[in-house]
Length: 237
Image (tube, rainbow, N blue to C red):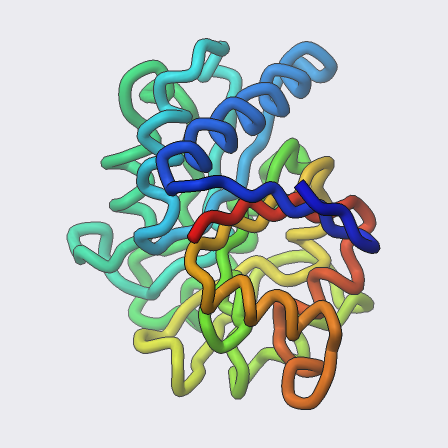
């Protein structure tokens, strides 16, 4: 484990060890929320990286019926699509003990994220923030959530002065159009986790922390700079 500035990095030998430790840590944060407030709220990311973590967290012993789960961001595709983050959450997290958790997806069925923005925002605003935990990932281009370099709404999504909510995002590296929680929304959390795997992503994170050259503009750096709580980074090769 290494600590620097607003980051604590937890190193693991493999993805299973990481997923086991991270699931235990997040379950503890949810239990703390349940004890303090009578409910807990969790925001998670998509992609392949968190699947083991989801499978393990789903078996955690806690009152899942009082837990609300949403997504950090979503591809604007139907839940039947293999690339749907909501589908992944339903298949891997909302299982076993966690099947009774309440889920607030961001995809609404509208034709475009712009048309679905108001309904997605309503769902997010209905959540009793702050989040007890926000789970982020990171791409090799330094994006996190759907804060993609070159995104058409990147500046607005990262603006700390705009109201909380969601924004559509279209970017060359994003594939499908997306919708994402804005940075002010993500940062309304008691605990912020960044789950990354591979030497390449550790190097991207290191460059983002230094902020040298093009890394000064990596979207993940905005999270590191502005987070009011320490960012706990879970990493394995």
